Length: 112
Length: 119
Image (cartoon, rainbow over all chains, first blue to last red; front, side, top):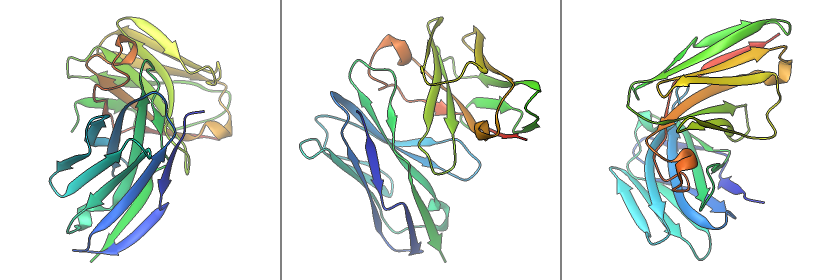
């Protein structure tokens, strides 16, 4: 059964600090992995997408890594801002399937 | 804004009511999706419409009925819902993807969602 596990479930950090969110998956055969940011009351917005051959991808202060061997991904946020407070969702798609597998998300709160 | 709009944003209905959720995309996409997001649970894909074909998640109860009259509009018809159906219902669209292959590579753009409460 395809699964995506995210940790931690929630995280509180001070503004300006860095943080790393984790995603472990058992989706097979692997096609791609996305990180989404979902602000309260809004739909998710894609931050990065990574395929099998990509190890690192950045989008501004967001950097995603992928280790296809260990089936792990991380999302690193640098110099956090109050606007980074949101839920971060890891989504993994399998080759030949149109139904992606979603993680439960990590709720990030950035305090001033 | 993502180019995907949903109405209404909030809906409260009784278990015997019939209501519909509406989604419209202005991005020229050819695939549209309905998702259910419950508290503390992962997003659950309910239905996919791509190239005029429909695919559904077999676990979705028949009290949810989708309709896609064209590639820009998507409806979710609701009838005799249960309190456990209370959730955020998200619509998304993409260019390609869906049934067209790519394993979901094509980015899905989400609407703001409809917050549904069933009393």
